[in-house]
Length: 202
Image 1: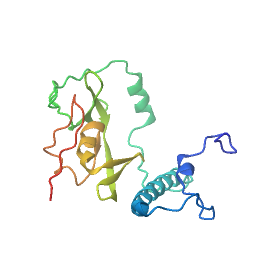
Image 2 (image 1 turned 180 degrees about the vertical axis):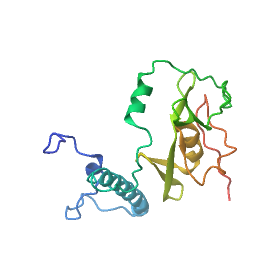
Image 3 (image 1 turned 60 degrees about the vertical axis):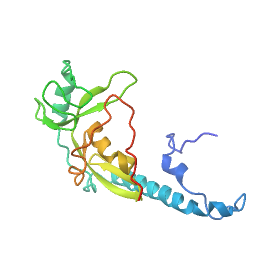
């Protein structure tokens, strides 16, 4: 059976995440030990709601202003000019995030084209790769006690645990207002496997 819509395109993920209709008979009764599953269902429903809202915003007619969609900061001509530049800037940094050009991982800078960027990194099976991402601002929405949904100004969504908020900002060029002070002394996992800090027992 093909999972395609009438237009020949694959169905969106939200179609598969939707809960089955209540009219369908359940195949087996709910066990007493499954009573705590309501919290998981609630989290899944929240994710579906956020994905659906983001999809509706992107489908807003061009004649209307899209909710939460910023005006483009970089012109198409400038993007083409950057893409046409064949030269590569080599970034060399140590595992503490200190780079030879004087910029640290997590710091913002303005390149030769006037574009604001943020120094980040990607860990690989060998050496980490350092990049100057185009800087983005993100917002967070609490999904559960220890889980957040991060949404960037370009509309990207990510579900992350609370202990990964600081790591995310250092890695991927995203800045979340209200978390700068909290993450100021954070040490990102450059060149090593990310491990969350152990939680203090209350």
